Image (cartoon, rainbow, N blue to C red; front, side, top):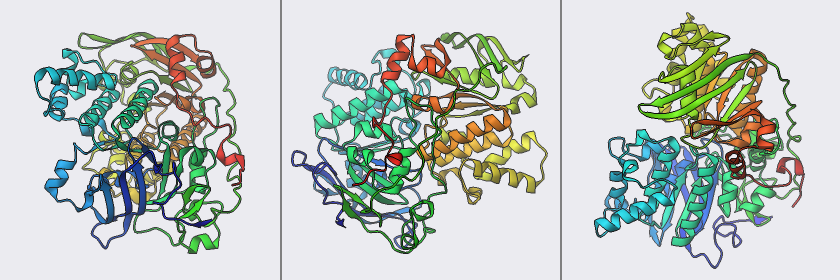
Length: 616
């Protein structure tokens, strides 16, 4: 074990092979909260990315991934300052450029795909206008039309005139993200920064996007930095990975080495939380919270959550060292690795025969003259979970909105505990509305940006219950704790939280009114694997203790085995399979389901690193 410069990594561990000239070099990047003398949000961040290569940035929400990603374009979010360091792109230090020069770099030499596709698209402009704007330098109309068709084909979208006339709100979340990715690659940049670009995509579209990113970066010699909490996706896409915790890179190396035999205890715990695509397991989250800027402990920042930490770890700040061809920031990096947890417990098959809580019969839904659901019939049992899977645009969200009365334009029968429900929520009894709560997919639009976290959660409490201020505060603190957020978040506003933290607040708001049914629309898509594990196990506990029923819409098919008893597969608005999870996923009868299963990303390792007990 020797001291290491994170920029001096063995070939292939940091995209530094001889065949890949360095395109992006980051040296000692530091971003502070407030001014130059404020506490750091990220510090000591160094890595390189070669031409045609992809570096993955992974870690929990709030670890600094997006802060680093934005700094690569010379930008810091409100309240942050890029204090020091260098970001060299094609021999140009981006951080030394003035506003006009930065504007010329962004969108041409360096592009960015944000986590929220709605933030990347102008809601007042049609899709064609927005794509044409980034292609304004094309020589003539014919070439422009040809390039538009090429871009849309690249991201698996139609190029018909009718589609190009649509506005962003007329596209699904996955379709919006694909348009944003097409815009980012349009000018063939030197650097593309992708911040959770596949969060809203189904597994089939996700696979296509990953293949597209890999192909285009290689073809055009573009350097790519891929920010994600989905370790299975990262494992398929990138050749090297940087694991971030509390604003520091704690492990950097070849993806195969880091994922198959991780050194840092934090990396090992993250990988242990990844759901298995073939086994129904109890998911293992990481206890505690990452430290916030300005309140980080002495010594190793991970020590308060690490089972291996001793007094030296709590007092001595670890420096980066070179261990087994990767850079690690851990005092125990050179010691033999021991298991940190037991092997994840298998989830026993749940008993059948529970009485249906929700019954849907021959549900047909339309948007205007366009029919999106066709005679869908299914049941959601008490104390159970029904997972709904399918590609973007298959009708999953429309089904959920029909159930909660947000899309009254449907026909068919909908019953709740044997009683018929009106199509519109406003015509349903107040208690029926309380008992069936909806958690939206997009955490950026689900919360009122002008209200604090306490006010966002307290609003539905005040609507359904008459509580004193003390009882209301106790209820808010309890539901925040249930979703792994401290009570100190109560006075904050949504824009002060990461995407994953906002989603946890949205979940807490739904739980606060003590529902009996939760309609969960992609609620884990914005969550890192550790918090996802906490949320899934929370929902499983609520099922047991409160006899809670769940309709769980998800693109993460690997998660289905750990959370659901039965699964419904939708394709083009039709129910193609419905039955127990094991039967449907292990023995699909429909070709569409079989294709979905073949596209599921997997870390593809024989055993989880937490339980392997490997030594260097």
